[in-house]
Length: 330
Image (cartoon, rainbow, N blue to C red):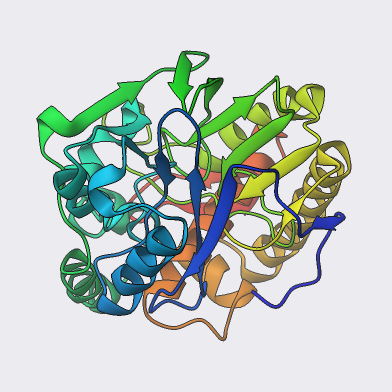
């Protein structure tokens, strides 16, 4: 997370909103955990079941004058382990609900990392050796999470109102980085908890996710993500609290930058398809990101697929059906 801030960073948070940067064992670095104080106490994204993280979370709460048992609600912005790993543990200690986007329920119950076990990985060209590595990776990561019991889970839908800490927040459940990614908007306070949907210094990865209810067997994550951005431009909150990095402002500028970035990246991918002939999404990813290894290659495939989708939608490439699927210029 060393990329420059794209929009103005804000270091001072409003009264009653505290932030801790909890460590993770991943290249992404720390994850932001927020504490919302008021008539009730809410923890947003409590990090992972990793002693380095949980000890810092407990110290963070202690400094704020509360214990784990005093937490009234836990919010999980999305079902990626660096954000939700400790949510089940904290919810049990606090006897509290876990608020999440409805489409993330399966992941929070412990069934994340399904991609490497599905036909989808073969269709996008991921070799068998990497699929085996991914299975090992997910098994390791699963030990850093606590599955959340059904009776703890409180799913919300897009535009639902949520009462947290004496404020009424609006749920914005927008697919892209995750299928049921939850952002929370406080109109009265002009503040947005954006999770990983909006980040002030990098563009979120459009993570590859299986979906048996659509023809391709996967979400068109980047297309969905870009389709969600206009609402945040119109919202234009004065303060955005993201899942990683500093708080920031000027969402319209961030969205404009994001659209420009993906348009340019799509043209780069078009050049790769032209030069490679009929590559798979995995082969495109290897050219785009030759330095990536292990699980990071999966993120590279997600990036490649997202831009291949954009090019296909624009009629600039077409797929060559088969297994794996290949792409060629039109």
